[in-house]
Length: 154
Image (cartoon, rainbow, N blue to C red; front, side):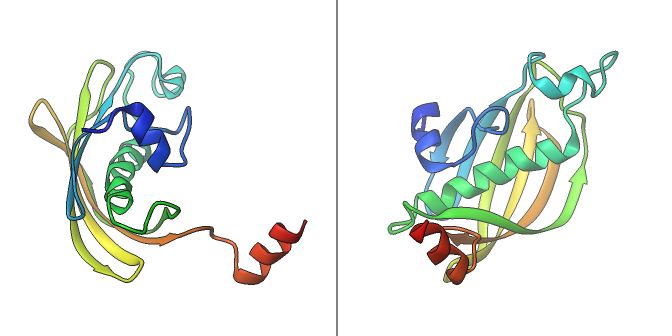
């Protein structure tokens, strides 16, 4: 199990975009993580005040962060960041509201070098809230090699 301190060592995200509170299970092929959704989330101020619902794009982000945790479990991946390159088959089945606990299961579909695909399912109270497949690349930075060298020289 990973607590928030361990998660913050693995993911570069920080408030308000760190959307994983705990990882219950993790290895190189799967992960199970939790996002505790509270009314204190900044997005609920405008989405929607009278009937707060977690934006679908943030549900996907939370699910993607759980998926990214799998890369951190791979030996030699300690300094890599998992960058999203595609989203496929995204479906929203149930709204995620304050007080819910979004439990995401991520399974590695394919990994070739530092590129891969992960299938995720997010559940609330056991019912599917959302599902998607994410494509990703793991790298130290998104900067092109020449850009990185310029940054390091500066």
